[in-house]
Image (cartoon, rainbow, N blue to C red; front, side, top):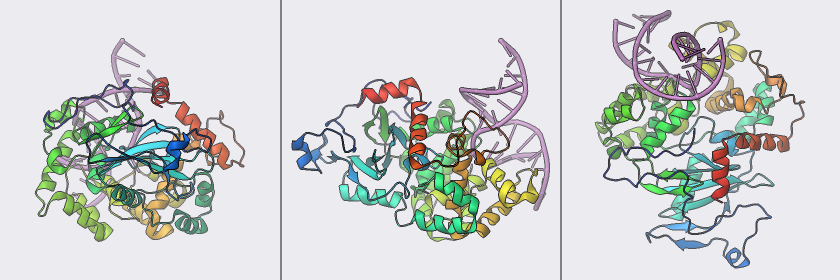
Length: 412
DNA sequence: CGGTAACCTGGGAT
DNA sequence: AATCCCAGGTTAC
């Protein structure tokens, strides 16, 4: 269930009215995709970067897709956005994802032929700021090709998986946004986490609608503080309601401000960062590692969950097979990953984790199936090229609800 | 200090 | 149909 919700507002004061999921979004310009065959009127095509003043007057729309100078090997959108790092980006088309970075509303999409990544700014107060926010968010200075080559040199299984799952990148998210998202993630499932994150986000400034989804800037700490525990419980947060309010309160007490306090963790050592995060209510070792890895430049943080535990006992620490996942053993697992993969161990863990996801298993050669549930339905030989991977990923898109599919086509 | 039982909720399995 | 189980855990005994 990934449809945008029309929720009860956190606070009636600063909200746009709930969206109607079936109402096609208003657009100033018709969108077009970036494939070579797309028909574009020659007039519009002249100015490849056509700017149109928005209704507000302060913001601008970038009418076209522009290349990001990134190959699919450096960034695969389907392997990066819907795989548990963020619950804020929505699939708004085949091989297309949309989300917000601060006040910027941006879509990313793979070129239909060569797979290169293109971006489109739907709304921003400053296009140059949007572009740099995007590059920062994508951790653009880190070469996936380079670090994966090192992982592959020391781990043949990683090398094999990497051939089939190219472009699984670690994002560099806003720390507060990341923290609140993973507060919602504890002992929870993706669908409900997404619903909860959408609810929180809906109190942020409305930035526009793409593909039937409404997008909001992530709310500031001050705005988050307006939500009471009871409101969150009524919105379905369960016991995580007090995690959110408690953490928001704790952050507001930090000298200099909670956002600054979180940002300051980026320069510190991993263990210090983990310990600091774990002082916040609802943040334990797993959630802290997620925040550290996905937003605080702690590239060797290892979020140890049940999946990673399976990986570790199977390939890294076979002597622990059968043991239960306890906090102490979590530390051992993390250490084992760092020993094997080095200072970017978290990036290695990310790929190994993705390979465990059911959605990816179906596109991996059967040799990677675990002894657990081998569905002989999908029988692929070991020569799976990029083309087949793409078609499989498109299949997963088609497997979404008819409602989603119809909605997307309507909104084109 | 290490091991266990509650904790909210909802969808899928039994 | 009723119940159990699980979902990228954390907290309190």
